[in-house]
Figure 1 (cartoon, rainbow, N blue to C red):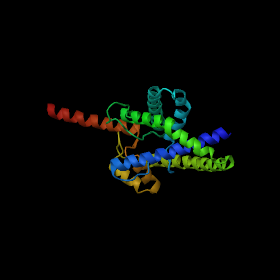
Figure 2 (figure 1 turned 30 degrees about the vertical axis):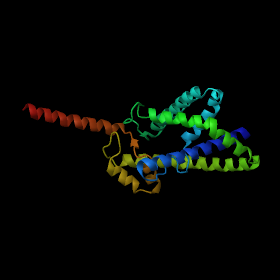
Figure 3 (figure 1 turned 180 degrees about the horizontal axis):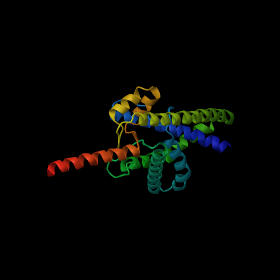
Figure 4 (figure 1 turned 30 degrees about the horizontal axis):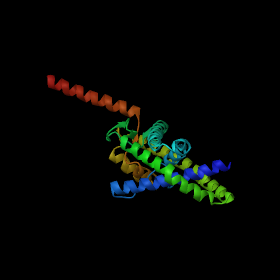
Length: 237
């Protein structure tokens, strides 16, 4: 039980650090502060999961820095791709899109991000983990158990609330009956942003958020095909 509590504490620390990294990166590139992440709280689980997996796997390559770096790149890429795929299939929405970045795979991962994950994973094994281990082992077990239990409760509640928000967001977008294929129209985004603060935060966190609606897509394709046929007929006449 203590190992579960210990690794969950590590998971939350990695998730919070990932949130900080994203805030700083977006702040530098976009010149504004955005609360990144699918969840409402200040943490990104993808970094937590990645940190735990890298900790468990990469420790076997600690004496081989280059192999460790390559494995960190592979693990980070798999986690980001799999997370993007699962979220797309679960919520019928595309949360990030790297299709414009060079050397990307289905827009879910790109070479630059993979390399950054590799560097981060290497730093995790050689520098970050030893420091965190030293800090956590100094906390008395009862206190660490209490803090981890409290964080776990908050995290579970956050996941439930956030999933309901996304569900309502999806239903709201569909209810507007607007035509959208690869990305939500500006009008849809404006309406959703005005719904309440949680919608607005979610849209700001994922500016490339795209909802899939196959029925709408088929209607659009059919309508465009009809227009094209009319134009061709007119030209022939």
